Image (cartoon, rainbow, N blue to C red; front, side):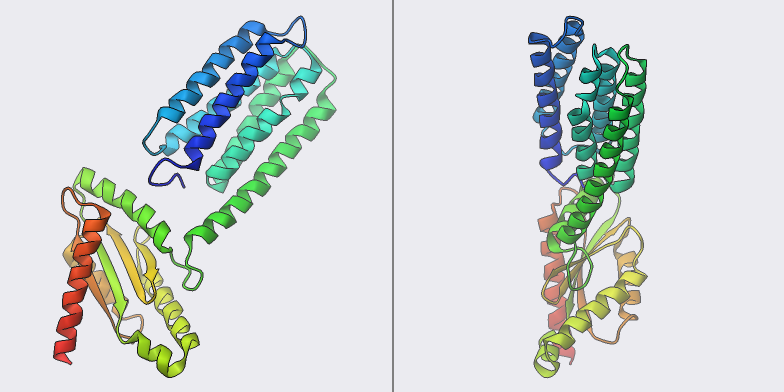
Length: 311
């Protein structure tokens, strides 16, 4: 979700804070009412700009806890603005801020988490609005909050479909190369840091070209789907299967040593009679994903050559 490097989630969150801080400064510089809480706006402006700068300077991947905290803090700050608003119009005018926070959460977070943040946002902001001195905004506020919840739900569902489409191989329904590499890199970083065993395996189908030549590409596609489906039923929850291209698949096996990986691959062979060859590599200190894949590819080449010699 958050990616293996700095990405749109971090940039959007930084922009959200920077824009919010800038708008608070504008409201403090040109107050719309004599009772406008100018001091509070200056303070929130500083918080927004400082938070945006800090997020923009955060070069590492955004940890999930940091994203959740930043979104929740933004919700509370909007609620404080609702509480201290001098007019009913000022309270309802917070609608774009509520929408921005809710839609950001729906765009970057898993749907259940996005729903929780949207509900939290509406609840705390409604509490702040109810505690404010102005009145006469109830009808508009109800319409606003229902709209926020509805749009957050729609955006969350759309983002989930787009995320699945971007990360899934359309033929086999396993992870595509890009998605597999992102997730495998996370597992690899953790394994190198903790010393936990990790095996990367390349699975290459034997004589797959003959299937396409003899029976047609439709039969080849069906074979790829059947193999991926069968393998998926035998893999553990933490195991990551991806299609690396053509008739080559790749496996990331966390918390697994060489013997465990060999046992699991033997189980996968039982799911379909079509023959394939696997090359494996165990993660070593200082490894990168590229270096592990290179060793697995070399192991695959040697096993393929040994198989040809024995036929």
